[in-house]
View 1: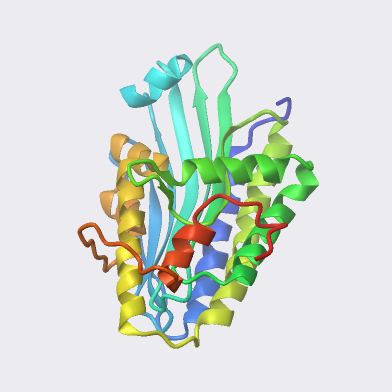
View 2 (view 1 turned 45 degrees about the vertical axis):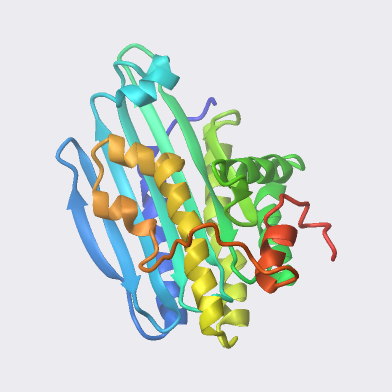
Length: 307
């Protein structure tokens, strides 16, 4: 942790990442482009939110950049990290969620972020976080393996233990405790990363951000023409309910944003436009829906998995 912290360099990367991902997703959608809103936070900072709705492939996609700062953190943050009490803070990041129309194309999520807290006379406290994860409805094994191979490629330059560690963290994090089931098939998740020098931590965050499109685009292209039935669409909407439950109950970014006075529309843009809940629904035995629960939602070593 001996390198100088350069928050402006991080901000420039995040803005460029938002540009690259939004332009690429617009191009593959082919029908709609992202609408952008810039916003200011009264307590300090702001951001730019981009949302694409009712596209040719994407039912809704949101990609948000935010950079917020202030004189103090919410009590919930300092309760877990008492050393942050009395610190000025900055938090910046890019977060995105893609909800396609076609239930054969998975929902995807990615986030990369940086936090720094400073107090006069003390060394700054900083860390990086982020990751990406996949939420399929009708999974294809080769897609899931490709997703995890790309996640591993993002990690490999930083050590052989990095992918297994952050893959497991993702499995544990994106787990809906009150349902006793995973949200999807995972990927990567990391937080509080400052154990390497600043340069290496920043490079790792960039590697994760830069590998999102190579992980997701081949899956979109492979599945976008797959026909689907109304039954499959209904199952997609039902499973989206799990996405909503996780984001509103457990997601750290959602809770931090709301507790720090962030822009509600931008924070909740991750939620799908249409969703269903059904009382005590159960998949039919030996059905494709049952296969999702039995084969894909349990945590597995997808790099070496074979059916």
